[in-house]
Structure formats: C-alpha cells, structure tokens
Image (cartoon, rainbow, N blue to C red; front, top):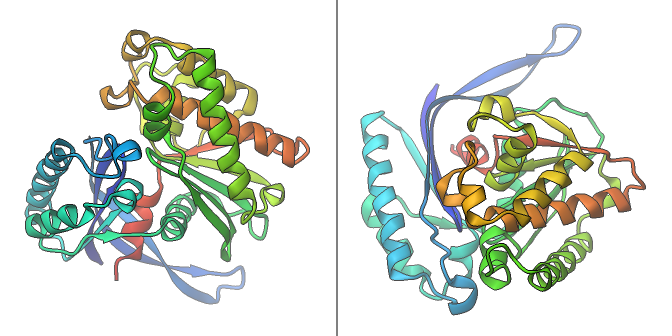
Amino acid sequence: MTRVAAIDCGTNSIRLLIADVNADVNTDAGGATGQPTPRLIDIVREMRVVRLGQGVDSTGELAPEALERTFAATRDYAALIRGHGVAKVRFVATSATRDARNRQVFVDGIRAILGVEPEVITGDEEAALSFAGASSVLPSRGEDPVLVIDLGGGSTEFVLGNADGVIAARSVDVGCVRMTERHLRSDPPTPEQIAAAEADVDAAIGEAAQTVPLERATAVVGVAGSVTTITAHALRLPEYSPAAIHGTELDLDAVRKACTELLEMTREERAALPYMHPGRVDVIGAGGLVWRRVLQRLADVTGGRITTAVASEHDILDGIALSIR
C-alpha cells in the first residue's frame, strides 16, 4: 500500500487528496484471478476556493492576488502532506493555467513551495483523468458507453467511455467562472446576458460533438462542484453532504429546474442556501446554465433515451491519485 497526495488546481478551486492506494485483486465467476484494481482509501480531502482564473479570460494572465491565494493554500497543503507521511505527490493544473501567458510564475512558485514539478496538462489529459476518477467508484455498465461531463471553472470536458476506457474526449473553453466573467455580470443576470452565454455554450457543445459522438451515450455522469451543488439544490439538502450527493440519479427535468432556479436567483438568495459554498455563490448560476444546456443537448441527440443524470463526488482528483506510480 502506497500513500499518495494528489492536487488538482483548477480555475476556481484547488483541492488536495491524500490517500492510500490499495490494489484489490478481481476474480471472475469461475474464481480465476484477474488484474489488480487500484482502490483509494481516503485520508484527507481538502478544498479551497482561490479563484486562480480571476480575469484570465479577459487579460490572458494570472493575477498577482490570485497567485498569492493559490500559493497560500499550497503552503497549507504542503504541511498536511509532510504531516501524513506521503510517499508520492502529483500536482496538476488545468484550464486557467493553460490559458495564462505568465504560467511560468505559477510553475516556479508551486515548485518552490511543494518540491515537485507542477504539471499543466492538456484538455485531453484532463478529460481522461476525470473519466478514470468518476468510473473508479461507479457501477460498471460494461460495453455501454457512458458520458462523463466535468464542468469546471474555465473549461468543460466531455468524455465518452466504457469498461475498456476512454472512447473519445474533448475539452472546451466554457465553465462557471469564464461564463460569469464574460456574460453574467448583473445580479441576477439579464435575459440578454443569459442568451449570450447560452450561445457560447451551445457553440462549445457543438465543438465537442465533432470529436465525441454524444448520441452513443447510454448514461450521463456529471462531476465537479457545479454539478454536485446543483444536485444538492435539487435535493433541498439541509447542508452540503457528499454522501447524500454521490451516485444520486435525478430526472433531467428536476436537474434543469434546479439549474434555472440557481441562475435566476440573486446573489443574496444563493448565499443563504445551506449547502452553498461561499466560493461558489457568484458562479453557480453560470454552472447551472452550462449544465442545463448540456443536458438538453443530450436529451435531443439521444432521442430521449437519456432521461436521468447521475452526480459523482469522485472526479479528476481521484484520477490524479490513481495515476501516481
């Protein structure tokens, strides 16, 4: 058993998973021994909203204050990693860092704090890690293709795969932070702002569909904070509960209704919700807009075959931990 630390540094949040990796050995119905399957035993899960991607969509650079927030969180994570006797660490950065001209400042700062080289991964790599993380804890559907949607702050990944792995994947530049900064500036957003954001999202879905055959999906799984928070809202939870959210399957109509409600609320109304993280208050409306459009497109292209969506609390962070060798 190996103790590893995975860090996922996205556009909105930076997350840490310290886990023991245990290889279970599978057996088939006749008792034959199969290949060992890695399994994570959580030790620590932490999340900080640092908004690293603040302004990147318009300026093309990471803001000094955003970098400092991220470095401060990384210092705290470094202390946890040392305290828990971690053997191996992998730090992965995604959309905001990919887009930034000054990403070397970020890379140098993280290396100095953590002692490991941060990896600025491609959208395709991000998609594969998201699928690995989500599929590691969800029931296998065999050869039936499942579509995993990782709805982040700066980008959204569309990953079609089955028990054999990824079939096709595409990362597109729409996310809750990017759409909020670009379009949804009013409180609540105006119909014109919503229409402009929807046009961007629809174009991005069309771009993803050029690579990923969405019509082949037999089920859809949503991951990351926007999707799980929307699920908490649909369930009307008294507090944010990963156990209550993970694996929840809801009718598309119920999910889209929750998306619309969050989009149309004022900031004050969203902040008062008991399951709303303070760092998501100003961007969850855009997250709802993106998720609503994605689910509508899936319902259309599958001829109504997909009628529900599953939420997963396990995502790219788990995929990063499982990838550590």
